[in-house]
Image 1 (cartoon, rainbow, N blue to C red):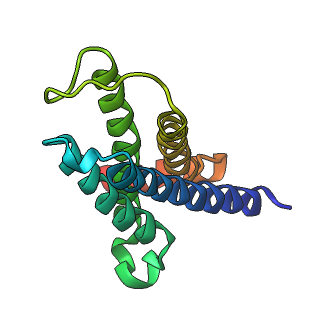
Image 2 (cartoon, rainbow, N blue to C red):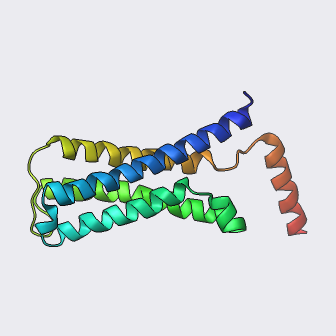
Length: 158
């Protein structure tokens, strides 16, 4: 497998696994919303529902044919979707940690039951995989590419 082919495979893998992790974050939150009765907790219940909606939208969009739909804006759209997925993972993890250590909107989480541990795993996975996706999809700076960029810069400067 050539380096560029391996790179494309790594980019696709991190994108789709990141999308799956974002969906898993949302599914975990909607399950907790209904089965753990978070829907009855003011503000927190609403945040769990909004997290589910945002996770589904971003996760499915990352799975979708972004290049075909967004055309020449696809790179920007993919960057925004990945950043949104990172924000969901990091934000829900931060919210959990705040609620464990003093409370969030008057609600305090206690203990690490399996659904909370699972949520933490999905949060970290979503943020890490989508961050890796953003790093891996950046154009490589091969010597030939660097030379071409320097040449273009010189032409613009003249």
